[in-house]
Length: 311
Image (cartoon, rainbow, N blue to C red):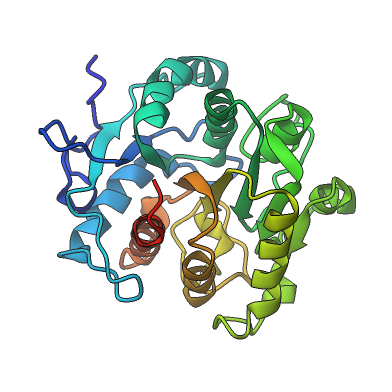
């Protein structure tokens, strides 16, 4: 099976091809069409296709805040060819596929459910030779020690990443957390030394000025840690279902698109090394609201990297 195989789709993000021309493209994008670990509604395997389709509306792709575009700088490698029935097999198959991409491009990964982030963090730690700081946008803390009796799933990856030393505990920061859960799970990141900006604490804070306290806390923490490499993991269910109904486990009371845009734009100069956008499940979407938000979050991240002059 070709590595260029795209799951049920051959469209590319912002119509960018695989970039095999003479001019190198420093940024890359690939889909991980896996949803074998969802705990509620399946369908996130179709997320990469939906996000790519929605990205076609970005036209020339010039960002109104960063005033730049990934046009000609981004290579879309399609979806990774992975097993689709076994978590262990999927995670075992990922390293030889993702390692060359991480080595040659600043990558954006389209999920898929959130269980894909753990093997990606393993690959990034191997590449950089050190654990990463993480900005984690989500409705759920994902710090459970088991997946409803199974050892691993899309709600355990944060716990596993910390336990396996893949991330800097003090550099792990969560945004939008609000789901039901035992307090020991909800407080786990904070107890390990990280920061949690839960959805209740973020209510009413949308503009950069309103979010200044949050932005300052993030910057101070990164400075104290020596500006480590940072990974962004953005679960679309961080958004309130009013903004993102198309996800497997929606949670009322979430973030707005304005909040997420403000945070992505204002923190664009951090030392990001990669990102994923996960849990888009288009079967439950309305008017493509969720996939449009996801596509624009990925685009905003890319434009922020370009504007910051980093790849």
